[in-house]
Length: 55
Image (tube, rainbow, N blue to C red; front, side, top):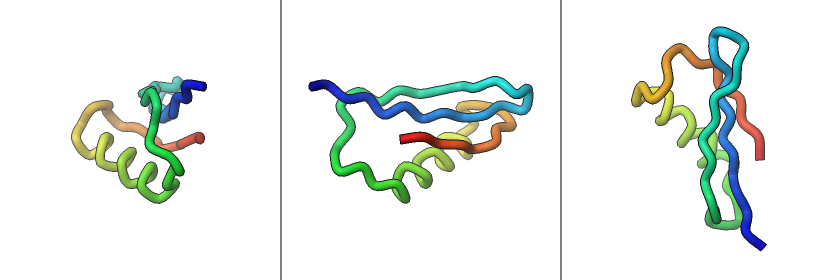
């Protein structure tokens, strides 16, 4: 069964932006997910986001 990890980011406009990762390495490390999301934001992939995440 194929799995997808969806990283959800809340925008300053109350919308949601997301990035999907197909077949993520398991087990999912929640701390690593949070760090990765912070790095995505720091890289400027999105602008002015409030971080939220969901496994």
